[in-house]
Amino acid sequence: MIPPYRRPNAPISEHWPSGEAYLQTTPQENSQLDVRQLEWREFFNDSKLQQVIEMAFNNNRDLRLAVLNMENARALYGVQRANLLPTVNVAAGLNKQRYSSDFLASTASKEVEKYSVDLGITAWEVDFFGRIRSLKKQALEEYLGTKEARRSAQIALVYEVVKAYLTIAADRSNLNLVKSILKTQEGVYNLAQRKYKLKLINEIDLYRAKTQMDTAYADVVRYTQQEALDHNALNLLAGELVPEDLLPSDLESVSPLKDLSAGLSSQVLLKRPDIMEAEHQLKGAYANIGAARAAFFPSISLTTILGTASNEFSGLFKAGRNTWTYAPQIVMPIFDARTWSAYRVSESTRQIALAQYEKVIQTAFREVADVLAVQGTVDKQIMGEQSIVDSAQKIYDLSSKRYANGIDSYLSVLDAQRSLYSAQRGLIFAKFSKLANQAKAYAVLGGGGLDEQEASKQDNRGSFQDKILSLLDFEFKRMDAE
Image 1 (cartoon, one colour):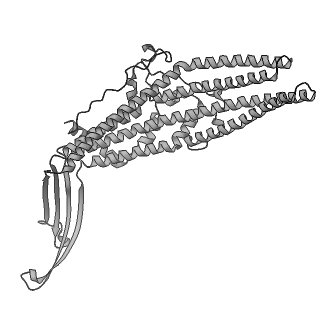
Image 2 (cartoon, rainbow, N blue to C red):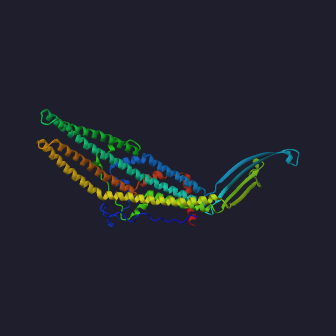
Image 3 (spheres, helix red, strand yellow):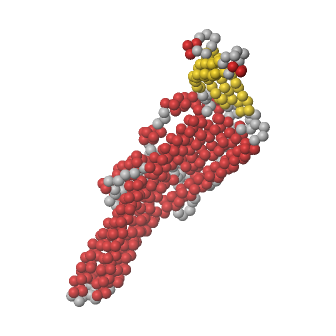
């Protein structure tokens, strides 16, 4: 009853965008690349950063919720799968009843005792038309979808931890910069005070030097505050306090990351966990249609009981006391408007799942295209920012010498200083953008989350009943194939 599933055509271009902002990629550079097989330690090789990521894997609550959702979906799949099996119960009972003399041939009333022990199957639905198998497949797709959601949560967590770690490094680089500027401005202000006492400069130049010193001090306080906020954000991701010795001192102390390429074809996106999750949801919608179709056909159930009964407890298991009941039942729907409404709902649900699947692919394509655009231009941006810093440094040095020799006013020094400070912050931001974009490339291309050993700690938690049902599921798969 389930419609045959065919993967829809991806609503995106087969090739990535091209132009001045993008690097030209050759087949030889990427033919063997499979980012999903790249374990995260191979990409993020900074030892301190690796320890922080491991802390997040062990303690992050969002990841824990994703794992628990997966466990819940697996348990629900087990419930739905178990409906294919008959439920065997044993029941023992005592029935004691007094009959009135009005209903008996004799004038005396009578008391009757009945002891019984029964073993049987009650109302087991024989799945001739695949309704239960369709629901089981839908539950299976839901479970597989939550597994991919768990993987997606792991990859997103790795990226968020790395981004927060790099943000701390960038803000500490800025903090080190403004501290050095403050130290320089304090020296300039002290010199200006001495010159002012000797009547070598006017009061305006003195307060200009003080303003620059106060501005640098305010920047030190601002970046100190921001660094503390960044640390708090990283603590939340890690699920506990990250020790100071695991934090970077600046951007230069972070080990360089690898450059990843998306390859030549956009079909690599189909292996991203969020896209695979959406595809499992789409397959589940197909299975739901099968269950809705099966509701139009007869429902066949079977009840059978074997037992023994006696008017004395000691006679329960004597010869001639056995009983049995065999009661098959077929229910044929004639008119039930709910079945037609349910079928229409299942069809609309499939269309919704298809639209969501296509939207996830389009979003993923845009994310990778953005990463490639930054990847193709960020090195040139860093070169430009470095050139600006070098030129601004020379202008500042020359302006300081001219001011010291009395050739220029202090205004030229202030202007050169502002330009140098702005250029240095721009260079720090460009370096941060490159590292953050490399981390994002790992995430948007569907890089690996936990390694096999770590994943097994969270995935292999099934109970004894789960293992028994998994053995029986092989037979169900064979039946489905037939």
